Amino acid sequence: MTLFPDLPSLSTLSALARTSEQQLLSLPEPADRGPDDRATAAAIHQTLRAARSHYLSSHVDTIYNAVTDNHRLPLRLPDLLESITTAYPGILPSPHLFTLESGRVQADKEGFEIDQAILLRAVLRSPTSGPHLLESMLRPTPRSLSLLDTFQATGDLRLHSVHLSRQDGITHLTLIREDCLNAEDCQQVDDMETAVDLALLDPTTHVAAVRGGHMTHPRYKNKRVFSSGINLKRLHAGDISLVDFLLRRELGYISKILRGTTTDTDWRSPTVEKPWLAAVDTFAIGGGAQLLHTFDRVIAASDSYYCLPAAQEGIVPGMANLRLTRSVGARVARQILLWGRTIHATDPEASLLFDEVVPPDHMDTTVAEAANRLDNAAVLTNRKMLNLAEEPQDTFRHYAAEFALQQALRIYSQDVLTKVSRFTTAGRNP
Image (cartoon, rainbow, N blue to C red):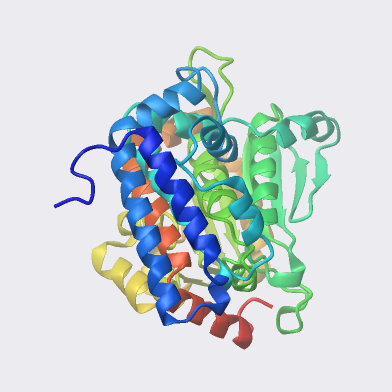
């Protein structure tokens, strides 16, 4: 039996949301709640979230069509949520609740991002609204467009997390977060989407290559590092956003590497695409490992390794659960995802993840040779068709819908909060 055998009206849902928010605000702050208060809060959330989910199951397309003017407006995630909050009170938590949450560590938050995830799951599940949202997320960002003329003129641009440098038709995106071994946070996601847009939109860029820069960390001083994954210290501090990091990362720059960026300027294709290669030095952990599954060629130094510590951290490793099995098969994928197995570049299974494994001092030459070989019109067309065959948009959309909710639940789960606190104390992300 459902909690709402009859579909609630919007006015009923709005009234329930107002009452629920007042009840939550009457309780002590999350960090100060005892067992009884926590049980009360959980019951309030359960009732309201069930009502929201039930309402959206029938009305999500009506809502989405209204705020996007029947798909004429390509709203990105934050704009979509803001528009729905304004036009349909009660569908999402009130803005002032998120203001109250700002500055709190993750363990001391109420978890209103879960309510955002309920909406986004419904949108992405829809066979009409979902594709439109995915296409909207492929559009260049305003920041990218504002920097395009500068990059086209100079072929060189340094952002906080990424350095772009174009030479002979190859644009190199070098990850330069020396302070944290290229661990990912909201700033890095914003910079990476900007960099990916610029590489795709720049007409003189034929191929793009991603590689980690030289680190200043004592353990890896002057060594290149690809990525240490999600910045667990930022997650613990409450600075890893569901919308601006976890979902924007997957629906934004990573999808653009795979599918291109939307321009609507050419009848032959609505997107601009380029071949992409990755060069892995030292390690690709977590998000860095996930990223590799979208590249057309991956080159690894012989002393590097690949690791997806999902089970240890307790969160979902992005789209790896969707893509990893295609690369290594079901058994090895489970060993990596569920058991924390590390694949070293010299392991036999490494050939399923890396196209070439070379000595560290051969990386520069090998990357240059691979980039030149990818600079081929036939490569561009065939990679488009390969990606279409391997991961149709509907497959990605269905996965992303469930990922939105499951990841939101995970980042507010007690086991994750405990593990993240332990990881940050141990210093996995410097």
